[in-house]
Image: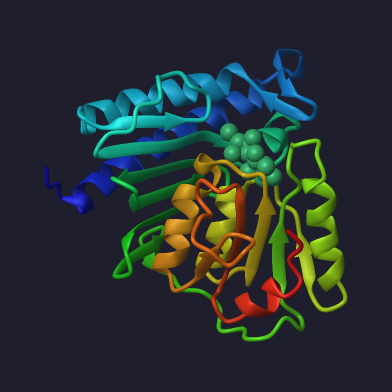
Length: 261
Ligand code: IPD
Ligand code: CA
Ligand code: CA
């Protein structure tokens, strides 16, 4: 089946903004007594689940024949010709501590290729969207990556995985290997941090033990904006492979020399 991807993207933006507004309103009155734990320092709330239900309802109307892969599993996973990949609230740890940023992340995959990405930060009111290289935007304006071509004074994001194995230590070692050269930030929403690379706010981002819903939309947006995404081996398995190095393309090789798998 063929779709008008631009029209679909407009609708997805509307759905993401609406879910983001819900997140922001609920955060104002959220009580920490309502936190549930998925694991050590891995939080979830009724708000993650309710936001996901709302997004799924909207997208089901938009493309009734599409399947879903969602973090909170409020709808059964089904891979179809078109499959939505959704994180209704990326940055839950920030969210439950009354902190920011956090985001809504929605990607559309056709067979095994992402064809649309939308990430919305409701607090900054920043909407990132892409359907291709000619159409990658922040709040409607075209964006592109930085021109920085060396790690000296680069501005780099990374994140600490929830997993309790050695992945966390390795990520810190990766940062340590480069820290004398660069400024580092941990913002706490992978989807947003990848979009920061796409819009030229930062030069690179790396993280391990991520899930497809954390990265599917952001990496598509970044690729469309002229950036580069790989797994820790330099390969293309960064959406389902749980490892991501995302950059403006020009500092990618330099970062890879210090990435410990
Ligand atoms: C998390 C955020 C965080 C990253 C974690 C993710 P969640 O997603 O993206 O920045 O460090 O690994 O799981 O749990 O808030 O949706
Ligand atoms: Ca997430
Ligand atoms: Ca989430």
